[in-house]
Amino acid sequence: MTARRSRGKATLEAAEVTGPRRAARAREIALRLLAARPRTEAQVRARLAREELAGEAEAVISWLRGLGYLDDAEYARARAGALLKPGRLGPQLVEKRLAQEGIAPGAARAAVRQALEAGEEGGRGAAAAELDLCRTLAERRARGTPLAALDGKGRARLARFLAGRGFGGRVVAAVLGIYLDGEG
Image (tube, rainbow, N blue to C red):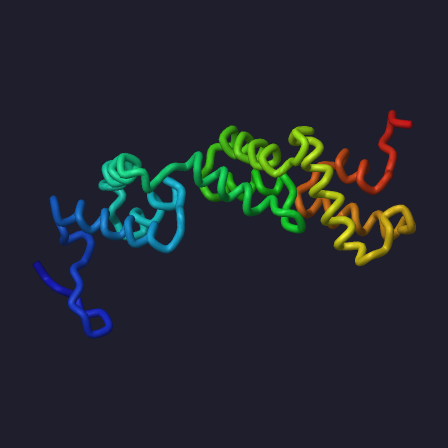
């Protein structure tokens, strides 16, 4: 077995570590990754693959799940709640971000809905919570100007901003008082 020098320390190349030592190294890398912040299974798999330990990924992920250190559903709920705070992002962009982090689309949608309902006071539901979040962000972006006082150009600019932040067209239209085709 050969050792390779890296920054003054002797390290073993990943391909040269075999059997139990590979498994122990994979667990060590995964634990170090999770010590920094919560991660998804996909993120742990990607990290292990980068370290040329993809063969040990399934066993390590199963071990971490058993310890309660890895739970994609809990990660999705917590991350959705953090991203949906007033003034941050809308539900569509949060779903997209969760999917990019390795959460299944259905699970991401469910986590966003739960986060919206948890943040809604009065039990009006996820749709009302999305309207409130959009209105809060719109008012903050308008910098004290009442939304009703915005001219057409200002409304269009604000509508593009809100859509870019992940709010649906109907929600943006309702907040800004813009009528869609077929509505009166």
